[in-house]
Amino acid sequence: MSKKVEETVQDDTLKATLGLIKQSVDLLEMSNDVYEHLRVPMRFVEASIPVEMDDGSIKVLTGYRAQHNNVLGPYKGGIRFHPNSTPDEVKALSMWMTLKCALVGTPFGGGKGAVVCDPRNMSIKEIERVSRGYVRAMGTVLGPETDIPAPDVYTNAQVMAWMADEYTTIMREPAFGVVTGKPIAVGGCVGREEATSRGCVYIAREAARTLDIPFKGARVAIQGAGNVGGFAALLLAEEGCKIVGISDSKSGVYDPQGLDAQKVVEHKKKTGSLEGISGPKEITNEELLALDCDILIPAAMENQITGKNAADVKAKIVVEGANGPTTPEGDKILKDNNVLVVPDVMANSGGVTVSYFEWVQNNYGFRWDFATVDKHLQEKMVEAFGNVYGFYCEHCTGSDMRTGAYMYAIKKLAEAMQYRGWLHNGIYA
Ligand code: NAD
Image (cartoon, rainbow, N blue to C red; front, top):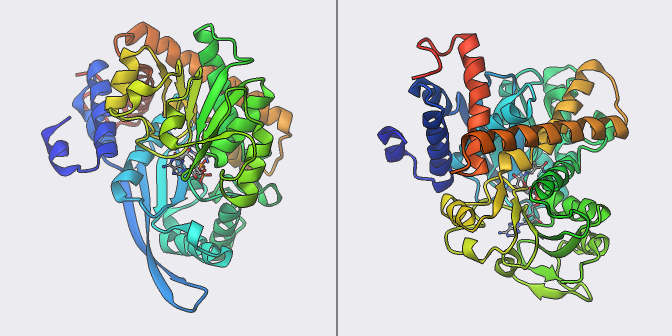
């Protein structure tokens, strides 16, 4: 990493991302100009969002939007509502979106947003006011041809509907394509809600096939019981996998014979927690990551598999449903222990892929049925896995699949930058 960046970046996740981008540019023997374009967002917006709380008081929240790179198309990426969100986290997440879109072949750049708040302690009305306030604060930074948000941690289809409504009211035009992940009734796409998980399942199946592990009957542990983790549990169970454990921010459950995924997910939905389910043993998050299983799917937050606990991972495959769940130290230990890590930019790209389908349908005023969405999603996922795994085997077996994915994506981005005239001295050093 260039000295300048090392000196200014404090956040470990952003530092690690920049390190990987720089390493990939160097391994590809590309000019440092490619890295210069990718090391900072093209635009970063921080805005105050005044929100009236139910008791009449005003809270001024902070909102962020990072627009990392739009060489391939409009910025695209989720908005999270989380008390620990920081500018650097949002920047790193926007960089991953740029790589993800390039890798899977959607005509989008990378963006990401956040509001620093805890919706778990807020009423529905307060969450609605935060959602609308975000759109008012960001104003014309967003747009169906400019920057298109989607759901992320602690945001959902309802939040997207409020955001689309606020945007169309401000702009005085029906531009529902400004966000994706909307409810079907307001221009959403069938299958979008579970698309990230469905993509994860197709990727997990490809990874298992690659390692000759029978997918039917494979034992799977999942960290996170939200949108990605919850749907992944249901879909994997449908595929005949055995869900041996699942956890959320407070606790987890474990059954070596296989959990009843439907019952667990319904309990979580109804009570907001995994506690109190009759039957399975209760476990901690740490124990979940160390379960005896074939496939581990971290589907919660960043920095969960680290230098401290990676050696305990017994899974043969880690499919990163979450963004950034493995630290560089964790990655190294998993590599040394021959664990195949399918990186986030590949493993959770099903969401942005179906978001792309939603955006296309909004632009054309046309509706696809589920069979069409699923067929295209499956094709995209299988193709992307094949491309990245093939590139990794050919160019970087000494390293890991994450490096292969970064290199594959950066190659595509650099080529586009070259054609658009952003690299006056050419791609290669
Ligand atoms: P969500 O809010 O629906 O669920 C998050 C889950 O993680 C909850 O069950 C929560 O209890 C749990 N959790 C939070 N902190 C935890 C901790 N420290 N340990 C264990 N569990 C914890 O969010 P989501 O949409 O499912 O997103 C999860 C991850 O997937 C995030 O990294 C997100 O960026 C990534 N992702 C989401 C999508 C999408 O379409 N929703 C797409 C791509 C990537």
